Length: 121
Image (cartoon, rainbow, N blue to C red; front, side, top):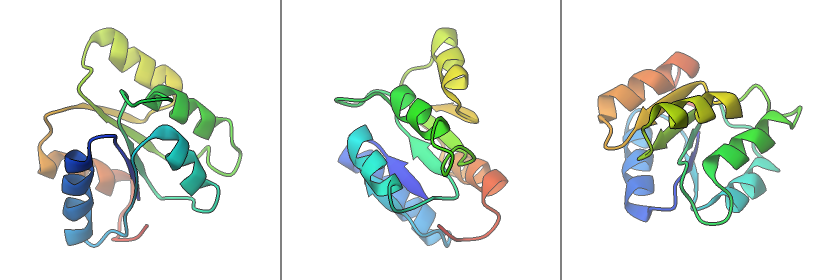
């Protein structure tokens, strides 16, 4: 799993939630660091914020979709942006699920389990 969010508190909450449920989790505080991690790791699922300094989550997702090694990685957007236009932008960027903060931890786990059946990366 790769969790990308510029808010260290949110990043840590998601990391702990996923680790407690058997997932190996790597984190990144922004889009560029996420892409750096993705140079060496192909996660089973990526949880991605939209509003981050530098690259937006939409830009990161588009970069992932254009990389043959990464294009099948499911991207779950988890963000405060919740307008219909935001949902469409997430879909257009290549996201498989678009969730709005604040989120219910059990809902995020359900979504992750759709794409990653066992506790792995």
